[in-house]
Image: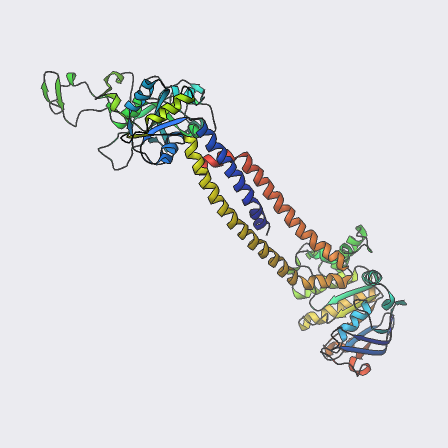
Length: 371
Length: 223
């Protein structure tokens, strides 16, 4: 009975607190991100992927979009490539400006400086027991994708201070490192020095043809870093979004205007607009849940009343015995009321304690189970 | 000890009526009350204990006119002067044996639960052969042990009168005789009076007197 009353009391309070906290968290993160540019499609996916590192990998745009925003002189562009993962944590390919933009500071170590470096969020470091100097392997996109992306052994350069944001759960790398993970950049044996005919199939002036036996590096070290190179124009390399930080309100409006053209392949969104729409939907769902919860609570309260009534009926003989022994009816009523009061007090006490704990750990609960 | 005169009683539904012109029990006497089911034997005990009050007539116990006392007075009189033993023992299963014996002290302000009462409870339990079971819960006891605990509870306040309502009705023959021995011995030790309702005719010879309910209450109609 204590458990039932505790749950009935605790659930609405906890739900209210979690919804309020999620509203605050979502809004705060969205408000701090003025504009996002990404591939046309779901604006919610774009926002969730770029600022909360949620949702499945989305359609990419090219790095040219970031150069275009920079060239417009209307906003600063911070490219984001959120596609890969390392032991369950999102790998975010970005530029150093991201850390300043999000006010992220280092707990230890340094920011990424060379290819293959990564900077991990506080919870990643805690969860995987990482510190500067350790290494972290990127996860293949698919276990059976044998021809696809090779895991890259990254060097942990630094650990961020806790920020109570999705950044705590992310692994940050330079865009180029992300592109290496994708296979757009790679390092391998120097063909000019290879003599094995099974590897070097053909050599014509500066053109070498190698077999699949050619050793590809899966770790970037001081010894092999110079062998890493990219093929093609980097402006065509993929990113998932660009965070655009307008110089002022007018610049922001002008920039948004540039993405209104019908033949435009990218979209620009204000994250706060998208999140407010999402919260509106969440609140509509919450209203329905509230109604269901009220109905369930009424049913449970009635069940509890029934249980108490049945219990009193079962204890009728006990009460009669007490009366026959010399106890007054008032005292018997008082004793039973005390028992019920104790049950209610313990239940409400427990519900209060759990509610307070929920308030204290709302942030963790949200990021662990919900966001 | 007990004197009932010109007693008339009926329950509110009016279907049951009890008339007792006169009924007396002497101090220290052990009296058995027999009669058919529904004839009013239990009602008689309830009238003597002041649990119910007569419509007319007097019920006097130890020179106190119980029927004239108020609710509170009857309760205080009952808990300090009368010990009840029930057929179904009526122990509280969520209390251990010691707490069950001490229960009368916990439900009234007329008695003070002190060290002496606790010592007496242990002494009574030992005398009844359940001294080693004081910490056990009522549900863990056999029928015979439960009734012993119930007798301890009824004797704890040193009552002048013990009312036993089919106290041996739920016991096997061996336990029946043994419990009655214990009850009689306790009543003698406490110099108390015993009024016992029973259906067991084999036990009647052990009482000082047997009252057949139909003898003095020919107009009773049981429901």
